[in-house]
Image (cartoon, rainbow, N blue to C red):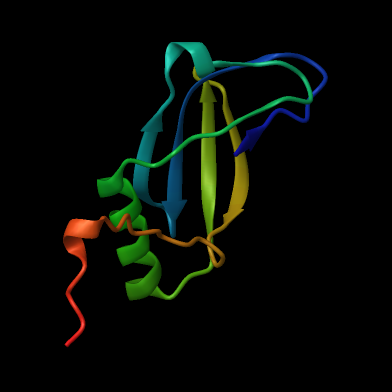
Length: 102
């Protein structure tokens, strides 16, 4: 989730997840999600490939926080930190995936 805690609307163009000055994932928001009114939020769901990339980096580099660089449409950057220690990755299981018990 991305929150606008400021007193004015923020027009979000994209945001980047960064660790040790290296870009992990670059995320682009849809047109309908770009405008964040004051004290409002939006939910961004990672693409499966991005979630796997983030999971791989977290496991390999053993980090629990990363930086978030959020850019507005003018290029202004707001920096924050994101706790990734509690991120869970869910698997979707269907009946066809089940193995019969013996």
